[in-house]
Length: 209
Image 1 (spheres, rainbow, N blue to C red):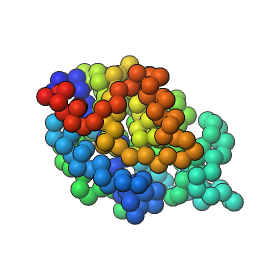
Image 2: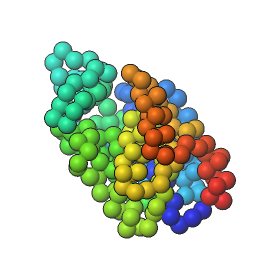
Image 3: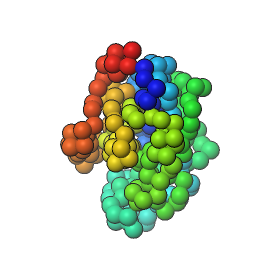
Image 4: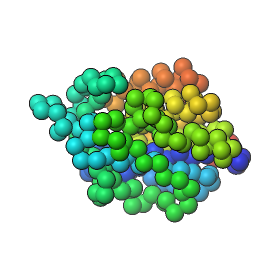
């Protein structure tokens, strides 16, 4: 392990796992893989943290249904089922996720009028979470991403990490995808164009050993 590597665990919460309000197929399968990575790396967590009636909820828009797309002040917005509402069991981390050694929890999406996928910026791409500055102050230069979902919150986090000057690895077997409207293929194209490396957890652990 190098002192400049950090693992960012993205939104491994009950509502994104099977049986949750916005369950990602196989979402719970990432937990043991992520736990292995977290035992070997300094790590942070992100947590979707919505208020009731959030702009991104289909239920907040008359006549709209989940997975439709609308235009909002900052551009296209996919509408979701109500999920990860502050203080609910759905917003809690998966119970098998080992969180005791996490060095930081970044809560995102708590502003009612802006959705938030990325660990670094809200969806207006201007409002920072503060994570970029925190990582730089800690001396980290490479971000290793795992979690849910690869084609949304992991993808946006990877893009913004690169924009912030970090090297980025996405751990493919520590992620699962929603894959709506070609989102997984779009994420793959984005990773290639930005020189985001995709690796297995075993390969990452071997590289940092």
